[in-house]
Amino acid sequence: MKNNTRTLVLSALFIALGVTLPQAFHAVPNAGSVFLPMHIPVLVAGFAVGPVFGAIVGFVTPMLSHLLFGMPPTAVLPSMLCELTAYGFAAGFLCKIIKTKKQIVKVFAVLIGAMLCGRIFYGLLNALIFKAGAYSLKAWISAAFVTALPGIAIQLIVVPAVVMALVKAKLIKI
Image (cartoon, rainbow, N blue to C red; front, side, top):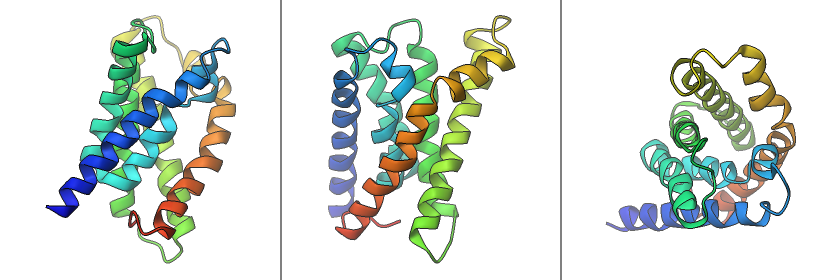
């Protein structure tokens, strides 16, 4: 029972962070697609609550943000729902299957793997469903890597720091 309560509380915390953190960035045009603030709590959630609840956090966060603040906009909401669900699931899943002696190596391996899985899933869904016929490899590389480069750098700095702090505080195990 204690573990279920902890998982639910942590999931709610990450959803709340995922909804509120992007608000600090919306004063800057296109800040969401450049700095990716919603991705950080979802990725950390995968580490903290596992693949199932990580996926739930990834799905609920953009939906709740959209309902409360209109962001992400309706046009990009379906692809963000899928992308962030993939991030939360992949981080949790990879955290369970990647085994290393050094925790920091595991954190980076999981994070990079989850970031790649989410971006590949995002690209495939856009190419096959959401923007079928109007989506190219060039558009995917531009959106998922070039435009998002500052956000990727932020994720590579912030997510490991937060995860390691949570581990050190004995709030999560990886």
